[in-house]
Image (cartoon, rainbow, N blue to C red):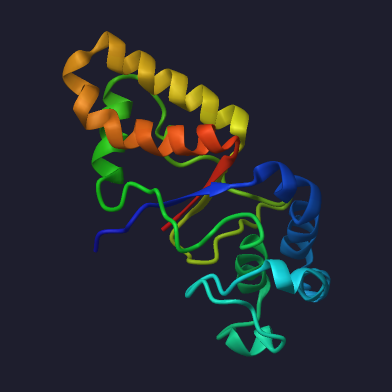
Length: 179
């Protein structure tokens, strides 16, 4: 089964300040109370992560499994638009191989997982969930553009990665990548 790489322009700086500490604590404890309270307080700025619709007052009824992963998934929508993926779709794996063969890390197209001190990862889709700060996006973009200059034959193949990273960079934001 092929997994689709979905990437979203993501306000990582606001996420770091507002939700990340709450989400990390919930990952440690398994308690969704603080996230649920945060969602209630920010509901008008959130959307359904699956459909992109406004979040209704009874948002919890939309959750099939009301756990930390699902609550976090809902909360993250304050920082990105889930209906606007700029990801690499099913080409991500091949493009990751191209990067690795050129001596670059696959984290350029992924990022870093969010993990608590005890190793509990945020992964609502159970197929991978990664984050890149704006600084990481800028660094990744510079590395891929340098590779394009060194190896012109890869220019067209790497264009989707460059386009993804440029979109985030031009917005002055990070990336959220999920499968």
